[in-house]
Length: 138
Image (cartoon, rainbow, N blue to C red):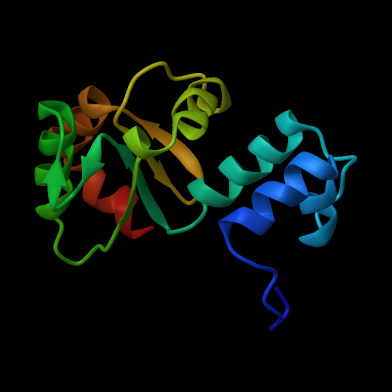
């Protein structure tokens, strides 16, 4: 941290066990931030990580469900648009938190400019109407 070696896993575990909050203090994290606030902030950062952000099961190179594969296929039709993706199967906190954050219970979820567009059905409708390309390039 800050160019200095804190230690390996054993040292980090010891810091956590012997000094509640010691690891957070060492990392410069505030103890006053509630878990809910920090999750909300984390989700805000994630949905804004890229202009077009997809939360899906798996990654575009290897989707892990049919819905995720279909939405990637649709997005890949728009070769002029790059997008980032987050595998919600790798982070349960994000997976559950994003459902509340977006008020959208299912995945995949597509965001453009930090705003929820919707899931696969909405993206399909936008693609069929010709609106998706406009939305992605605004």
